[in-house]
Length: 486
Ligand code: PHE
Image (cartoon, rainbow, N blue to C red):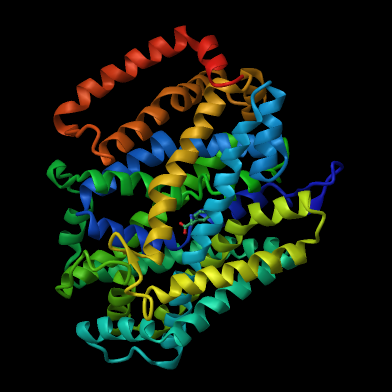
C-alpha cells in the first residue's frame, strides 16, 4: 500500500485489491464452514440456496460495499456517514457502519479459535501425531485437542497475536501477496484430493449429496443458514470489504473485481465440498458431525493417499494462511476507525483491539472445554457469536446497505462510482432495490415463523410479489426516498 495525495492508503497496483479481497473472502468459511454446514443442513438444497444467495444478494451487496467504501474513503462508519450526507440523508445510516464493525470483531472472536484448530492440525501433521489413526481415533483426537483450555488457548492466542502483529505493522500487503501463490496452491491441492476421492470410492455419493436438489430437505433454519453463509463467505456486512474498498483506486472496475472475488470464493467452497464428502462417505462417517468435520475426515485421506503427509502439511499450511488473510481483514475496520478518529497510531490501535480480542476469544475457546456447560438456549458462547453474526447481523446489515444504495443515495453518485454500462447498472439497481431486499426479508420472515414458505409451490407467488413490489417501488421512488430519510 502507498499513500495517495489525499493521504489515504491505496492498494499497490491493479491486483492489490483483488488479492486482498480474495484473501479476505477465501478462508475457513470455504473449507471448514461450508462443508460442515452443508452436512448439517442436508446437502443439495442448502447448496442451491447458498448459490442463489451469492448471486442475488452477495454480488450486488459486495459491489455496493466497495462503492460505498471508495466513495466515502474511510472506515465503514465514516464512509457511510460521508456518502449519506453527500446525498442529504440522515446520519443515522452510519449505525450500519457501527454494526458492521462490531460484526467483524465478533466474527474474529470465534474465527481465531477455528484458525487455531488449523494451526494445531498443521503441527500434528508435522510431528506425525495423526499417523495410523482410525475413524474413531480421529474423533477422539479432535476431542482431545479441545479438551485442554491451555492447548486450545495456546493456538488461538497464537493466531490472535499473529493477526494483530500483521495489522499493527501495517504489513498486510505482504501477507496478501501470498494469496497469489496460496490460491492456486489451494486449488491444486483440492484437485488432488478430489481426484483421490474419485478413485477411492464415495465420490458418486458425494456428488449426489452436494448437488441433488431435494426440496423436502430445505428447512427454514437451513435457508437462514445458507443466506448467512453467503454473507460470511464473501466477508460482507462486516466491515472488511467496505474498508478494503476505501483503499481502491478510482480507475479500478468494481464490477469486474466483485465477479473475480465471488467466482474464486465459490469455486474454492464447492471444491472443498467435493474433496471432503467422498472421504466422509467412503469411511461411513456422519456428514452432520458439526464443526469438527474437516478435521476428522481430511486426515484420514492424507493417511491413505501416496505422499499423504506432505500433502497434509501443505494443505494445513495453506488453510492457516487463508485463515490469516481473512482474520486480518476483520479488524481492519476497527483499526482504521480508531486511527482516523482517535488520533492513535496503528500500532496502539492494534494492541488495544488485540487485548480485547484475546479476552473474548478466550471465552469463546472455553466453549469447547470448561465452558461447554455455559449455555443459553442450548448454545454456548462460541455458537452464539457465530449465530448472531451470520444469521442476523450480516443479513440485516446487508439489507440496510442495499436499501441505502437503492433508495437514499443520489443515483448519480453511485452511477459515477460504479461506472457500469447503463444496462448493467440498471440490473444492479434492480437487484439492490428489489431482488436482494425481498430475498433477505422472505428468508427472515420464514425463519421467524411469521409465515412458512414452501418454495416448491410458492415460487410463482414470490415472483408475482417481486413484480408488484418493483412496479410500486418504481412509481413511489421519490416518496420512498423521503421515507428513508433522504
Ligand atoms: N470470508 C471469510 C471466510 O470465508 C470470513 C470473513 C467474514 C472474513 C467476515 C471477513 C469478514 O473465511
